Amino acid sequence: MTSTCPPADALSALIDDALPPDARDTLLAHSAACPHCAAQLADLRALHDAFQDLPPMAVGVDLGA
Image (cartoon, rainbow, N blue to C red; front, side, top):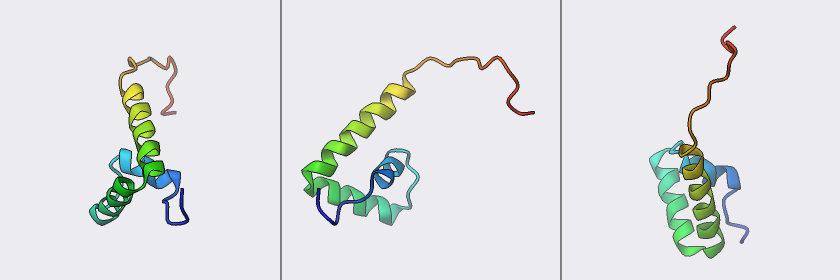
């Protein structure tokens, strides 16, 4: 990790596709050159995919009220 590494929440936003294109491109370029961030990004992608694979669950209560 270097002083130019992005915070974990920025990498998480990248995984969630919640960044504007220029920020996304910057983070992807950094991660391609930074082994620490590349590993962190891979871990976040694996976690995201694992959550996507979980079956839906009924809450059992109305959370809208």
